[in-house]
Image (cartoon, rainbow, N blue to C red; front, side):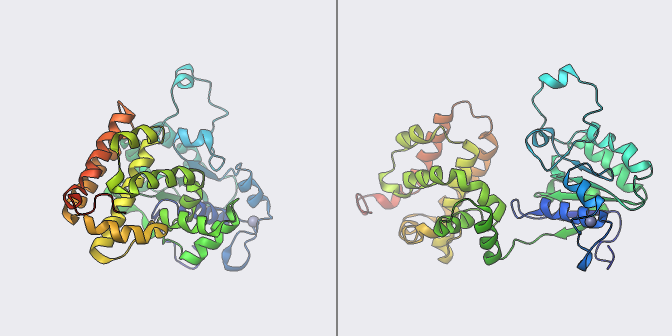
Length: 342
Ligand SMILES: [Zn+2]
């Protein structure tokens, strides 16, 4: 703000999930609120404002996230949660996945009344695409008539899902994927494991998004089992694979299959793999047995399954279908030629 990089009253930080946009947004808000900023306007970490911020009690900062995230996140606080009377219907309800209009409305006092301190007030919205349409429209009104001394910081993995009118009211800042070495260094420090090969594999699987890589750590063994089930395409028994894997999270499983098929296709077309460096030589051989067109069609099919994976009627049937079609990708080349060969 001080050197003119941030102009106006709203910024949209956009970029891939898992690269640290929300951490950056908090860092930005904290720095702008700091009473005693150090070099490069960064937060001092010592003053009363920085302390409030770390305790999540800063009177001039509000973080809006879906209820479901607030209930299990330590990063976000709900404005006025303590002052709201207990509402029975709400207590019984599952925590919402969206940012609701009532959350946006609760901002009114905060943004329109004068601040606790004399400086700026911060409103962080994360992820911004979680706003439902009523909430989006309510926010748009605020952005159209921006309250003085308020900075809205919207953080989004999928900015294309935001109202175009909201996007156009924000200064858009594309957040880059960190370079691989920095990401690896962060991962090494943040992870409990010291197995560098494992961390490297996780980082690749995450598409070089380090926070996403860290989150993958606990599913690492499950992912390995999954890959082992499908990598030898000629030995794949779709029914047995579905039986063995149906307890996994299906959304995650579809995503793994997408990444695997992406690498098959990418390797076949350009000789490059992205997500599975450990299996590169295997993928190099396997991809010779596929028709790029049919893998492309299969990837499109997986996209349509991604939405369904959240509410499948039958996990096993769902996976059987995926694996039968997956096995079908290799069928033409398998006839007589590669049976039994690895
Ligand atoms: Zn400070």
